[in-house]
Length: 150
Length: 185
Image (cartoon, rainbow over all chains, first blue to last red; front, side, top):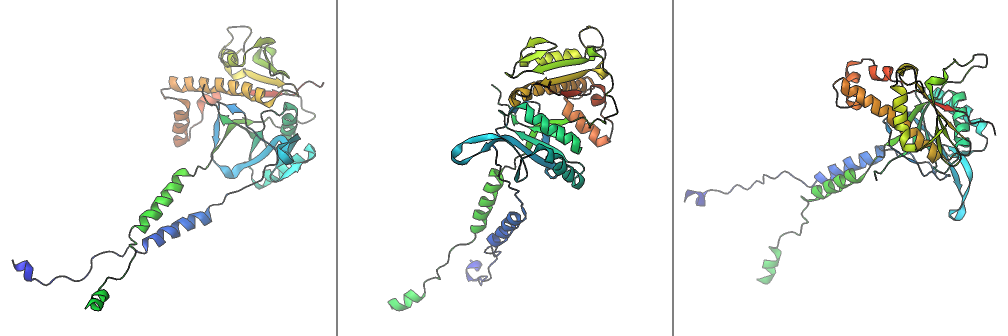
């Protein structure tokens, strides 16, 4: 019964946990701030075709996108086929070579990802490819979705 | 007496020890639900621009497997109507022929696949054909890798990347796909 008379230890042994959420929030905010989401508004509809023989592009830095598809108009209507690079619609396909050549100078390992609507006609795609050959950007990628096995 | 009792009451405190757990849960939830979408597609390398004074190298008719896709998305393989699903086997036969069948290529290194479309051909049909041709090459590479004792081609690629060796399979069976210009209408 000696314990009964012993002096009780008064100091708390807990680690203060009140600041833990702050630390976690700091981490969360750090990652939120340092993550860069590049957004471009696509002005053409690109429903990608399905394919099986897919390769992944691991290095997103190397990729430049070209969108080809029917233009999105007001009120859910679709217009004529348009070609878009970055944020701008390309009126004359002949300008693609200068645009892409400049990109190639900046990034010599450039991969051009062609996001082409599945209903587009081959003519425009071949024209763009011809321009890419002129610019010297030869690595391309026909962007497509994974085929859902039936 | 009652007043004294009230003073004894503990200070009102919200327990903060579980706040960290809540924050963690939130963090993990967003970590799991965020998908950084990886771009997938059919990789190709376009042929470099031809100089005006240089003639393209001569290619024997026999070494080229001609695939034609028309405006309706219908396919001709060597001028014979064919289903898209049959292209894979045709390409394999063509590339691995090694001079046996006079209709197909002389040897693997010389085999070429040419895809020609019309200007009005839907892109979807073109990709369907391109996909089958690439799948034929993928399956041939897989078979080669298995012959070398690897489970598949991807494992082989990983193994040579470690040792910095040349990709012998890709050198042996080169994916030679040419995209022909449509006829001027």
